[in-house]
Image (tube, rainbow over all chains, first blue to last red; front, side, top):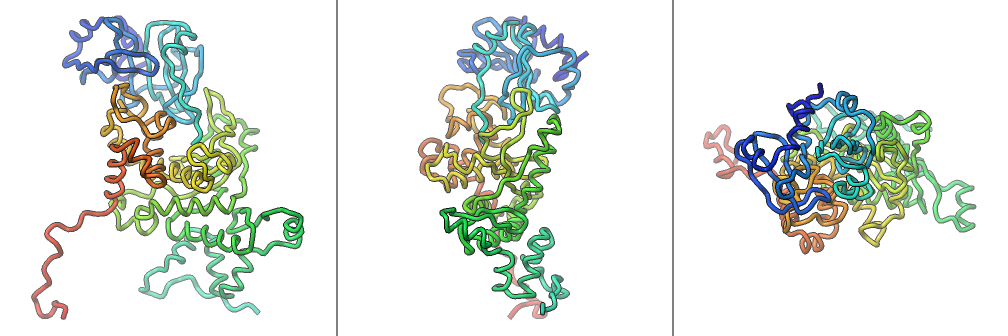
Length: 146
Length: 328
């Protein structure tokens, strides 16, 4: 059982199925930042509640991505998460650090970044293909020069 | 006959001279100081700043512009004895004034320590690279921008509450690191700050690459300012993220339209890179930063001003009236 941000991974994945109304009913004090961008996904609305440590990006009534930031991932076990998810379909450069890697599991709708020691960020999205993830969600960081 | 070496110990009760403090930190500096004290400056200059050998002179006669000197344990390309002497001065000054060792050996250890997944063959390939004299000059200039929070001066600043985040600098051929899950050499990296070892690196690529400034001397200084900022401005990163709408958190842009963007494309990578890019431009091209990023310029002004402790409220306490303690 992998616990991430205080939730079992399966429970976090289930949050992807919530509609906007259901999300607002489930968490208190949901606030919305309209017309923003997450990497390559735009325009989307970002919904956030102090009752949950992540940010929900909605395109209309459809969840485009759930982002869990570094500050909420201190309890996430890198080894456990990697074991549960298995071999990634893609390993990409991550914006989270010069030596960090983004491990992508598009079929499961999961990607996480790590520097080899800790889980830095976690993305949950509707299952897709590697090509669609790279074309529609992932924004490659500039080549590290310093 | 060699004159007896004088002791490096200060007289009892006397304040420790900066050079002595430097010598305590750096054995190379200690050797220089001991030689200066025993043989005099002129003699020392000829010893520490090794004059070009016969072979060097032949090479220069046939058009070579520099020769390789060993200065305080570091290899440096210099064009003259004056440059060699000045390289020795810079290395000693960086240690004594800023509390930072110029040590490519320490950097090699830092880089190897940061690459836990590297193979032995990769680690064996990590190698030092001789400094260019102009790189040492650029690093000295870069450090001067942070002078109030470095070395002994730090004790008189608001940053005295925390240990100095930077203790060594070195030069290597190439950066070894992780790229998309694989440990590889990264030949296009110009500099790195290693937080675990509080060390920063300059690499071969930085000798010629000019992504920000057409003047290579300014570019090298800019790269050094950027790397130093990763260490010395770490304490300000959380406030930086909170201040700027552009960032949702340290890793992720908010995606809000109209937020003041970072001053360079590279600064869009993360809030830490944004802040380091701001530092580079703030110290080297303030008009550009002011024009493109007025809010970031104001943040940098506040940050740098914040190094100075607040003056005592209400002024100094009144002079004692007691005749026995009053100063005439």
